[in-house]
Length: 406
Image (cartoon, rainbow, N blue to C red; front, side, top):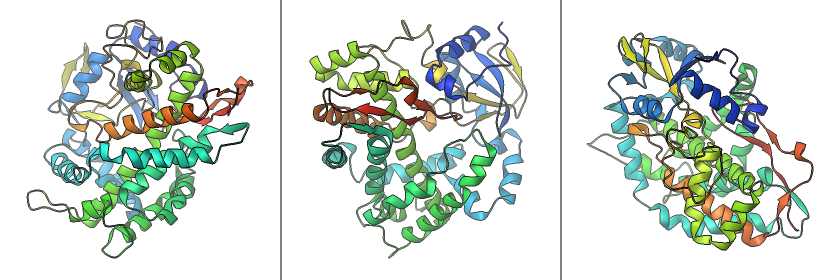
């Protein structure tokens, strides 16, 4: 069994080339133990099978630590400003039946407009952003495209006035280094401003557009129960974060993958109908969401050959599951024709990502529109210009500088 005490899953170097570290994880067994910033010692499931079981066995592994005998989270929340503490009220932090209640309300709101119906809007936003790049020799696609597309789409879906869209970029712009306690604390004022704004805009007459998700969630009812104002604000914040942050890094990672694998980029140009397969491979190979929220053992149990105690904390390391050689042939290779491709980038089980179809559609449209406009696009020659963030659980580029014309 390999020694995993010095495993690095935070640094920019790891995110630039995660495969050696992921291979070491697999060599150590189906679960490895690491000390992570802020959260402390955590067991990580690193194989496809162990991640799948961890995320599906809701009797043995709870999302809410209170269901595993821990009151630590509740004690911590009492010391946080109420504006921050209410963000824990979203469905990601609960088990059934509370999770089912909250998700049912969100599902009901999403059904008011199918994701496919959003295609023209997403394409129009992408084209408008690319219009700004026309005539330029170079661009940083992170700043000029990859962030703005998901931001504009989720704000439009939520029904937030267009004049307010730029506020979110400014308010949340400081939350870039989640491995640093100081960085997280420094970003809190922006988070507080967002929460206060969402509370105001979500009230009747607060400014949310009537056809958006904010209004739909406010009015949604399932089984005679509606969201409280705190639950509504927390849910909107979750949808905004999930709909913007992770999709930003999927799109940017997908662009970088194609720019650094010319054979795959050429194949996609010859076979444009493979765009859906390409997006699935980007989800697997990039793995923008590296790990899940933690689970907690609800009882003493022997699992994956190890003894776990009630309350022990575990998480699924999706990036490792997505390159498990027991599940994928030649897992380090980027292959847009890979089939089958049972990646776990959206998770699995009851907490399977609600916005999976939206993320797929946005990425496909982004890639199609970008290369239709700039078919000769390539990376700038200085490889050092491609920079990754120090992040826990998210694989995120700092910048993506490209030459737009051949």
